[in-house]
Length: 400
Image (cartoon, rainbow, N blue to C red; front, side, top):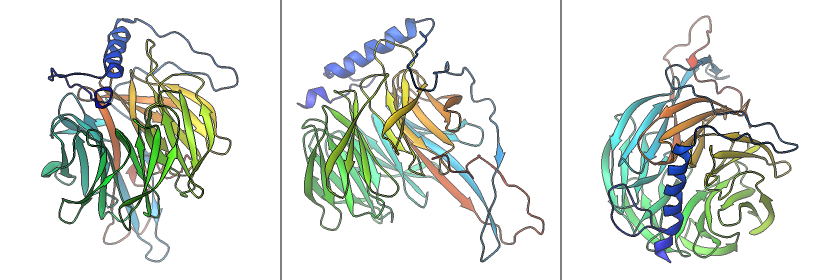
């Protein structure tokens, strides 16, 4: 079973699973294609051609927040971390101007990334070196390397920042890391070839996608034991949970669908068929919970697609062309931007979620996969007498 999940890096001569081999052949065809064919789907917002804009400049919109009690203002700065699988690096993008401001060497085959709630650390899974790199986000340097199971893939951090959960595809389990010591506390057995992982907003439950068994395992964080198993679609890849903790969305790569799980009952209550694209991979829920973004590589076609699902109806309401073979996706804190890692074109698409159009394209390392956004607040010692807008990314209004 493992061979169908093992991904071969640019320098690895080992076996590669058929799906990933096919994925690389899509990439060859993509680059040979001169222009993308127009896509029209009745009842949906029209697809606009992906922008050719590079990250030479970006529109900067003011955002100011005022504390009612202290009457202070704060400045928010966000950066995006992108795991470059083929380069063995993590690219750091400043979301103010969408420029790469740092490139951090990590382990071999970095594929997943998550940032702690306080923004101080980023945890990166290294698929081929069986480790997790810990990045100090203040200096953008690796400060620890943690041995975990075989072929670590997904990574998620509890809301209080105390624990990191890492899925190990090759060993069929989850490593639980203590962030105070950066050591593995325990290992939890789950289904075959675990991939994506997400944690409920209250921190009580961990949802782990087991692609080899077409199921989602549920872990109790108090005991670190598996307490439930939920059957989903074929070859599930990633999972995302709504901010209110009531729903989990799972991408079913083999069925071209998204399974919607009711967290209270632990059952699939709906299966959403994607109208354009195939083999969905990445998934993220907007900070307000109104939208779900799903990435689809669309084999043999240019470009890849991000399907936008409205959570009120669980229906596809828009489709956004991005780069080749999109994978990971993450929102900025206010939800006005979504960052999509395009593993087939070695770049990141920056989506304006108000217009559902690509606002910028940022070149990164080779085969970018996972993506996570860090938010930093800087509070001045005294507020200005006359409040003026603080120049930051436009995230004051929640887009979803």
